[in-house]
Length: 128
Image (tube, rainbow, N blue to C red; front, top):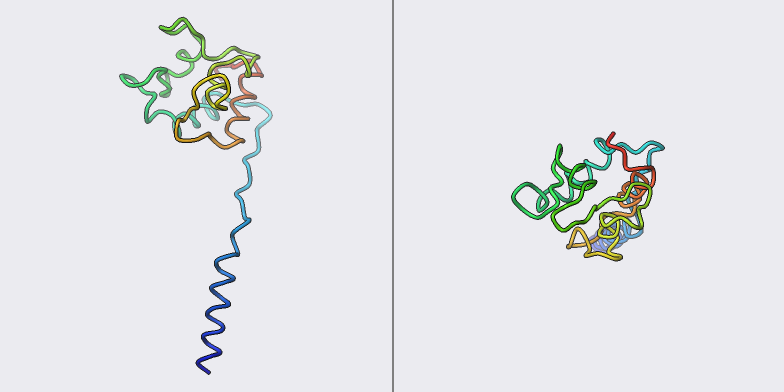
């Protein structure tokens, strides 16, 4: 009887250890109309404002300041978002690590978050 219990425990442990190996969280769908205030700012709030806030690393990506910080000329003479051109926008280049320093520096955001920002920029980068 003891051997059967041990065998069942080993089999259960093996099933448990491998059962979630290939399970991945589904990517979030991209809405037809991306909202800066609802969608894009939410990404900044969860992933960026630890460093990008008033008095710290520029640009200030806090709620109420981020849109202006991204769409007007900064102290370096750059505009970080070019409406209609994600691939030419410094923000998108930083998020993808192509053409600018990778942001966040500890690893790229999920593909769905990057795609959401890309769509917002390509759709004209509205302050909506």
